[in-house]
Each structure stands twice: as structure tokens, then as C-alpha cells.
Length: 157
Image 1 (cartoon, helix red, strand yellow):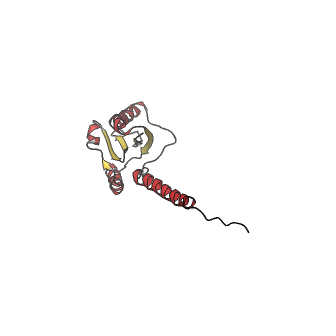
Image 2 (cartoon, one colour; image 1 turned 60 degrees about the vertical axis):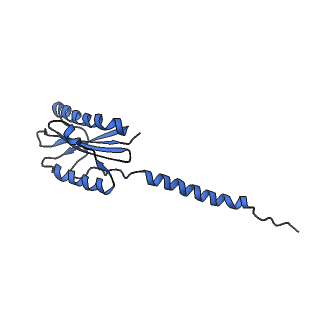
Image 3 (cartoon, helix red, strand yellow; image 1 turned 90 degrees about the horizontal axis):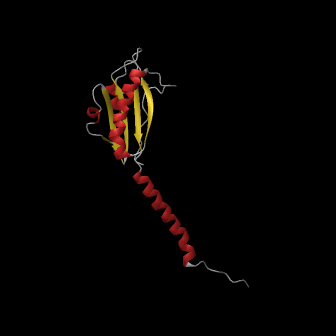
């Protein structure tokens, strides 16, 4: 007659330990990651190519550069995308749109960000969970009335 073996306590403990460890790992990962800021809304358009002339390009890059200088030391590595705001874009409405989404997800405005950009440069920035997001634009427009908008995201790395 064959001997029937009973599982030992050690064998029974492995599945329980595995479940507990994976649950703790998921809880640790899920609670730390902030919700990323949303992609820019309409009317901002992702152009096929950057089509602004030298003068507007220089102003746009200077405005974005100030944002990088202000945010990168504290929030680390960043990435940038260029958009176009068509003639008549309501930047006050765009700011309200971002303010509402940032507040909903616990992001806070970066104090005095717009004021620190300088004359004829505008922007907004939010930070949360070691990450930051900035959107900058300038007063100068292209002949068709459009203007460049730069979005920068800093991941805290």
C-alpha cells in the first residue's frame, strides 16, 4: 500500500507568501505614481513640421528655455513637443482647462511661473509627485495669426 503524504506547513505557506508579496508590490507601485497631465486639447494642433520663421522661432525657444531652466533642476529629465495655436485661440480658456484637470489630480501650480518667463512670454506650469508640466507661448504671431506653443514634461529622473 502506498503511503499518502500530507503537505507540510512550509509547502502551504508558499502560496500565501506569494500572494502577500505581490499585493504589497502592487500597492507600493500604485500609490506613488501621479496621474500624468493630459495631452493638449483642441484647438492646439500638432504640426507636421515646425513652420515658424527665425524671429518667432527664437522667441519661442527662449520662452521654452526659461521653463526648462526653472523646472529641470528640481524635476529632472524632460521632453518637449511643439504645437500650433491657430488665430483666435483663447488662452484664458486653455488655462482654465488645465487648472481644472491639474486640481482634479492633485497637481499644484508652480508659483509665479508665468511672471518669471519675462516680457511677451506666457505660460503655466504644474507639479505633482516629483513630476512637472509646463506650457509656454509668446505674443508674436505668424502672418496667418497662429503662434507656437511648447509643452514640456519633466519626469523627475
